[in-house]
Length: 452
Image 1 (cartoon, rainbow, N blue to C red):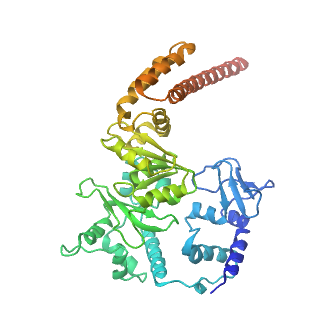
Image 2: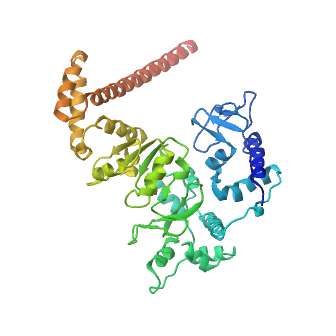
Image 3: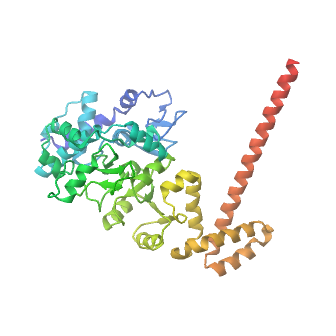
């Protein structure tokens, strides 16, 4: 077995190859040690990615646009979903880079327990299963109805299969036994005498379902969420049943994609998260159970300094938020309008309006959250009226509104300031558009006059 010192030496050698890794991705480093950001979530037009960017240390990087940084392993995790911690780091990520750079390394010399070998084999089987998913015309058409582009489908590796039988046969041809595939919930059975969960697995892998891979924090696919595309099934969604590597009470969809951010938006499921991604919100996380569990709270509190609950506009959402916020550090909430969820609201109103809701919820932070939906419209109405008054009298009216609503006066001041700022921004944009139009018109007239 390789000693710890040897492993550390190999890791150091790989870290020093960061420039070569960037070159392999087609990103040339200029004389200022800068290049365009290689992350798929950043359409970098000008070099903003600094090599040696974390305190000037060798083998580190920092993107001034993304405001993220790390080493070669963090970059590979963000770009290629390669594990950057745990046993998988030693058995998958290091072999990937040592082969690329010609560094001697033998992962077989690392001891693995029986359980570790099982999980390792399961991850390989799920990776193969994900590779078998294809973007068919039916998937593309259904995705377009949801507002998802091809780039988003590829980013989440979304697709479907020809049939369950074809899907299973392809996995078995790679050496996986049907018994092993059943153990990890990839194979099932159609017979009514079999457990219902095995019948669901059979129905999950169908050409009529859009199949969405679910990854753990290290980026390994460990389950699937399959959505009916016909709107005729009695089961709109089918999710992977619990197995050793997939515990729903612990799992959070897109945690691996958001873990490098300080803030996370907590949403109800995969569809909300993918629509948020489509609208530029890349740090959204989906809960795969009906409520947040103790394990969820521990994960969120250990990885994020701020968590924002996005609550569907339905009865009981506010009470659920109260319980959840009591278990989260630095929590916030976005309470959506009645009969709305993040998916529908984002598609109808866009990301800017969605993010504005956080500001409005913050404004009413001092009001009991279960009264918020009824009081929000009244507070906004009064703030609009106060905004129209003489600025000298604003504090007088805000004090009265604070006493009447129970909201802290500082919170109301922030709300009024935000409202004025948004109005000023809209006015400035309108003036700039008007000035630009006038300049274009003037240029056209001058051009016409010179030709005459």
